[in-house]
Length: 196
Image (tube, rainbow, N blue to C red):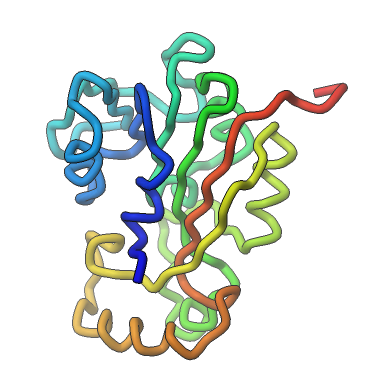
């Protein structure tokens, strides 16, 4: 069975921008795949020292156009005040046909609606499959893959009820994909449609 981390990293290649990689454990997995000199980490603060760290905001990135072949944004989009600006910036700094690999909570998740696990002060922007697809396509991305996963200890660094993760995994075996907790989206940069 493919994990959230495997799904996020499967399409990553070339020079990588790791957005929000200062928190969580996803960065360590990325470093196993890509040499450290091929990774730049962008975050609003330094929580853990990472590879080639740059402090900055993903809504106004301090990089030249077409600087990266891949962008990894694991558990970032829900913390962004202006998701459209963030996705536009990802499009701007990606090379043509570059890959944006992101994960975010699924607002339509059956378990999220019961437990309210996504309702946190730091979650500013929540999406369901249709709204994230629309956002990405409106900003010049083509969706390559969308997968759904349960929250795990790895994807929920600050979780209080870690005992519940095995139960979540069992529940996810019986609910339809669209009602699972976590969305992983792989998208490619394509030319904007006329007028954008």
